[in-house]
Structure formats: structure tokens, C-alpha cells
Length: 298
Length: 329
Image 1 (cartoon, rainbow over the protein chains, first blue to last red):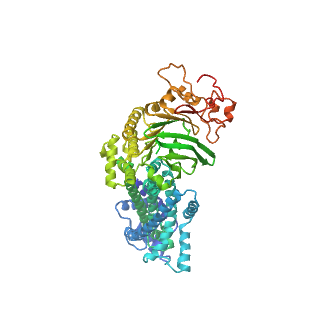
Image 2: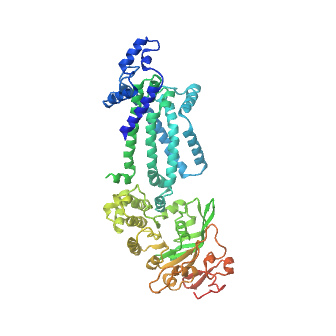
Image 3: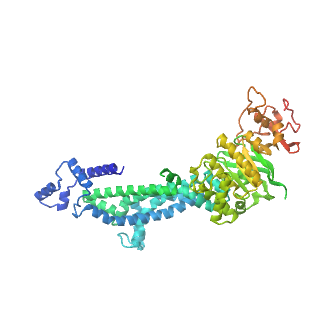
């Protein structure tokens, strides 16, 4: 599945980049470059060929592992993307850990006290968390903690302090999703017969929840966490931009602005591959959580 | 210490829902002697399972609530115990076998762990010792001990019910409640499981409440029978008394609706009508809308317990001498 998906993705991205206004040659040489010089560069880069020829040429090179060079820096694009990846990984992991640390416990508490005041408050907050746009939350956090209170840096990757605000920004929405998922999954599980069996054995309520219910309830939650991690790795674009975080997302935004097609394509392909790998890892993790799946593959 | 292990007095359990109050159990009385087996018989919705869950205080709350009554177990009123005291009884002195073995085992724990858990909690054994005991329990119910590391989905239905039985008997309880333990199993497996339960009960001298709607199982297994209708016990007798001399029109109707080998009957006579809606029970005798002997007084007056003979009780106005039966019962 991975290969056709990536070919499709590259085709769409390539078309968008091709048909939007802006001439890469002009961008490289500057607005005021003489016409003949621009024309020469165009010819050199093959920019005068028809769209489909250009696309196929790109695909042929890509299959050989050559994704071209950045129009602006003239460096191989994949190195560029790779050098940005650790920053993105750091931010996504921080955001995800935060979301898991908040979402799962709150989801469990909320489920065990369904319809209580606490549960209602949690659900309203979760709804807010899901609906709040990242860039807006990021800006508000910067306004409060950086501008007003001057407590935390507003951007860049300069040590742990600079990680806090972007991680909160990124983690909020995910925490809300995990909370809701944990709650609904938990609610379903605690109505199952085997929970009643556990209670009838004289197991204490705490252990019923933490041992008998949680492992069953976590199976769907893990799927969601995996999907969200995939999105975070690829979709931290807005957050990275707001906080000038030097990650893959921001690299892509800059590349789009400069119409640096090879960098955009390489970023997109990279994100798709990472997303697929994360999903694969989640599937493998499944087998450890659910013995029914493990025995299917035996 | 009395020789009654269990005495239930005037138990009332309601489920309070948005659609109305479901009157599941209405003034139920019942006694059970040590080592005895009581069959609790009745149609779906008669309140059998709710009664059983009340004894363990596991009626799901909300919406369920034990409104009033007393449940004396070994001389203690269970309804007055703290949650912690109640926990030390569940799975230890009283255990329960649930209806559907397919869903009553935790799918992500090995069966060994699930059996050992109760032993570990109640007998203060270490994890290893509890697991050893769990292996013995598995062998006792006819499953090789090597299978303790397997998960429930690797067992068949009948095997799962054996595991459930092993869990229930692990701490050698003095009362075992079996809620339709064989309904979800096919007939040959039913016989095996019943046989197993009978043998183990005799071995451990456990008192048992067997909930079922199968009179055949009652005849094979029980010493006493309580017939439930709309949340009450309407007839209570020994097995012989009930099978040879059923008194309540409902009980007679139950026997009339099963085929008999001895008597050649043209057509079975099902009881007409349906179980009353528990949110809106009929006034007077709850059975009157379906009873062929019913008269006007049955709509108003609630029958009280009448003793037919030693150990045979019935709730019907006919035996109070208030009305006469339309035909000979």
C-alpha cells in the first residue's frame, strides 16, 4: 500500500507546485535577473519541458534515491529533511507524552464517575481541546507566558524551556482526543461480563479498573495514540511555524513560500513514510496487548 | 449457628431508570440449608438474576438499588456489611457462576492468572503458591494443568465454563450461585458440566442456588425448588413435592408447557399471555391477568404465604380459601 500512496501523494503535490504561480528560476536568480540568464537556467533545470515529462523525470530520479537539490540552498534535499527530523521528533514525542500523561488518567477517572460533575467538566474541556486551533492556542500561550509574564521563550529550539510551550500547544488537542477515547472505551469495558466476574471474585475496585479493565480498554486507545503520533510527526506544521521550531514542518512551509519544489516533495514523502512506519509499529504493538491477535499470526 | 446458610427476608430491588422504576424483586423470601441445592425457576425477567446479584451485592448501581430487606448469610446480614467486608466474602464464601462463559472471562489474562487471582486475594498465598493451586483447580475440572498459560479464546465454550467453575470453587465457598450455567452450552456439554458441578458440590459440601428455566435440570440436580414470578417466590417446595403435587396455577402451567414421556398429551398447554411489564405490575396477585382461575378479588388482594404441608409453601388465594378453583388442581 505504501508505494501507490506515495506515488499518488507526489503526483498531487507536484501538480500543485507546478500549476501555482511563481518561477523557480526567477526565485533562484532574484527578481531583477536578466531575462536570458533566467531562460538559460530554465533550460538547464528542464523547466521548459511539459508537466508530465518533468513529473516522470522526478519520479525516475526519486526511484533511484535522488530527490534533487534544493533550489535555494543547492544542497541534496534529503539531507536537509533528515537534519530537521530530530527537532520534529523531539517536539512530537514531548507533545505525545504530555497528551498520554494527561489523557489516559483523566479518561479513566471520568469513566469511573460517569455523569458526575467532574466527568461533565472533563468532557467540556475535552471538547474545547479538540476544537481549539493549534496556531491560536500557540499564539495565546506566547502572549501570556512569553510576552506578559516573560517566563518562557517564544520560539526556537534552545533547551528544555523552549520545548514547553510548543509541546503544550501540540499536546492539547491530542490529550483531548485520548481522554475521550479512553473514557468511551473504558465505559464499554466496565460493562462487560468479565468485569462482573472479577468483582464477584472479591477483587478490589481499584484493581478491577487498573488490571482487568484498563488493558482491555487500552487496545483501541493505542490505535488512536499511534495515529495521532503519525499526525504529530507530519502535521506539526502550524505549531512549528508559530514557535519557529526548526523541524520538518517549518522546513516545508518555508519551501512552499519559496516554491522550492524538491524540498516540498521530499518533506511530504518523508512524512508519509514516517506515518506509515508508525502505523506498522502500532500494529505490532497490538499483538503484545491483545493475545487474540498474537495467536492469529502464530 | 442455625443450619440455614442463607435467609432472605422481604427483599425489594428496583432499577430506577428514566423510563420508570423497574420492580425487579418485590418482597422475596427464601431460605437455604447448608449443603443443600435450591433451584430458582422462572421465566426470563422474573428477577432470578437480580436476586442472585443482590446476595453478592453486585446489582449494578446505578440504576439498580436494593430498597429494603435482609440477606442473612451465616447469621450475618450482608446488606449491613461494609464494602470491604463484602469483598472478603465475594469469591471466598459465596461465589457465582455466570450465564455466558464466552464473555465472563477476561480476554487478555491467562486462565491460570484468572483462577489464581481469587486464591491470592482470599487465602493470602504468594503468587506462585496461588498459581500452583490454580493448576490443581484446573485439573479438578478436567483441564490439563499445562493449559493454565492459555488465554480464554483458546478454549471451547464448555472448557471456558469449566474454567469459570474452577474460579468459583477455588476458595471452597460455602455457597455457590450458578446463574443458568448451562444455557449457553450445547446439550452434550450441558450434561458434562452439570455432572461436574454435582460431583464438586458433593466433594466440597457446598450449598448451591441453581438459577434456571429448565425444569429438567432442576429435577436432576436440586433438593428444593423456588418458583419465581414477577419478583416474588410464589411457590417453594422440596423437589418431590413440587414435581408430584404442584399447587400454584403458574407452576402447574409450567409443567403443562413441557412434553412428558409418561402421559400422552395431544397438545402442550402453554401459559397464555406474557410476563407482566415490571415497570407496571398488576395489582393484587401479579399472576391474575394470565390465570385461568382468576376472579375479581385476585385483582385487589395480594395473596400471602399458605403452608400446604411441611416445607411446601404457596402464594395463591385458592389455598387461602378465599376463592375456589375452577377445576380440580
